[in-house]
View 1 (tube, chains in turn brown, red, yellow, orange):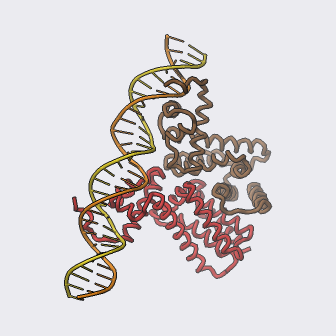
View 2: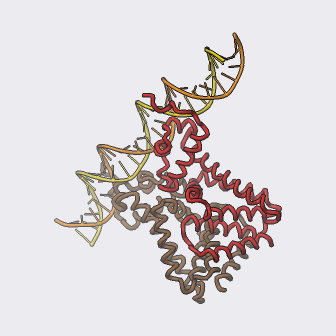
Length: 187
Length: 187
DNA sequence: TTGACGAAACCGTCCAATTGGTATGTTATG
DNA sequence: CATAACATACCAATTGGACGGTTTCGTCAA
């Protein structure tokens, strides 16, 4: 009857927890496994509690995707701050963010998997499209060269490969590729 | 009581129809919309009929993915037959198959979308992994250079970009990129 | 040629479990 | 004490799938 919700209230933590569980479910068991029951259950939160934070399942997914975009933006901006050369800076930041996936601690890999899972939902795909267009317009002055576009394409390819575990290559080859890509952004 | 199943029996056609409908649903409405009811309904086939061809939902998805891999293999092989140079031939075929997405008639684009949707299902992702490994071993003699790996990565990036509509670029830039990629496979 | 016959290709119904969501609590916190 | 942060109970709809029936089809003996 009344054993559970005597615990301390930590709305921000719970909200974050819910998003993380949803991410893990999506990456481990696929999109069809992301149900309200599953998410709330694995979070130790009641479904009512879940629906208090996210009024509907769509809202949950949108919030999750938005949180992923924020992470991406943060990773890019961090890399850009450490980059003195304006020309191609965004592209290098983007590349860096895509490469970072491989080196992140194990749990973080989930977030990238989720990104892909979420990209298959048509509504969220539109949101992604908007994100790309915004950045593309923002950095038109420094990152609109053909080579920069190529690098960003390759970064996507690497991201995909790391994600799926395909196209395995050894570290030295990977490093050569990265060096070459960075070089391309500076031309 | 008995109006429907008096029609002519065309097992292969119905089977194909079911796969196509499942593909369309997945690409248009996302993975969560691919339900047995939805597929059978939109196919004009009863759920019993659907479950006759594919004993379970997983079987349906696996069959769909297998059919996609067959298409990919066919596209690659076709491109390889028209390619006289052995060295890097598979990589060029793979590149060609990825590029083909853009030029295909509108309906065919769905198949690529489905591929991505299906790749988010962990079980099918494993199947994809196996496919890559098989090819990687088969063509180890002609397509194991670093540059070839790079080209295949970039091909994936282009595939992703065409799919999501991101990274828009004009035709001349695209052509330059392609030329460069093909050049890389020949080194 | 026929026609019996088993198998394959369907259909329609039913079901337990799960789904997303509502409504109404109860508790903590400012 | 007002409001936010939860929980519990419930609901109609949908889910994957089991089941038993009906129709067509290939085949092979008569």
